[in-house]
Image (cartoon, rainbow, N blue to C red; front, side):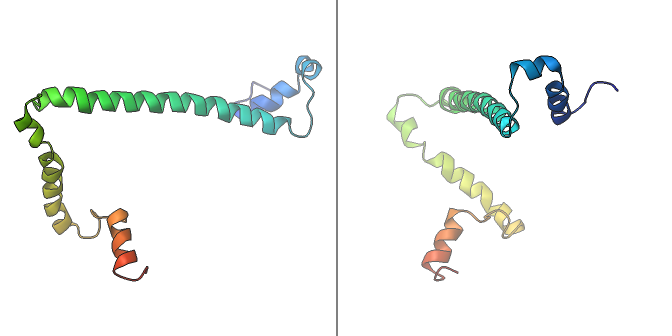
Length: 121
């Protein structure tokens, strides 16, 4: 019989070795604790990747975006900043006409309409 191929089979294979049996005591909750340890380690790596991605996006939008859009410290260019989301919303209008109900989705605006205008339906 060759080496096991999946994680559970590897774990069972390791437990069967006499070396492991001498070092570790395998009781009722050993597998649960081992899985919790694995989940904890993987989630710590995931949060590191997530935070790094947030830093990268922040750098890309706020630093490189100001250079790309040529936004300086002048008041005139700062006053034009609210136009960026307005232009994005205007670009969604043809999509909303072509695909009604799909672009708007089930977001917060629909929630507010349902609660305030339709009595929570």
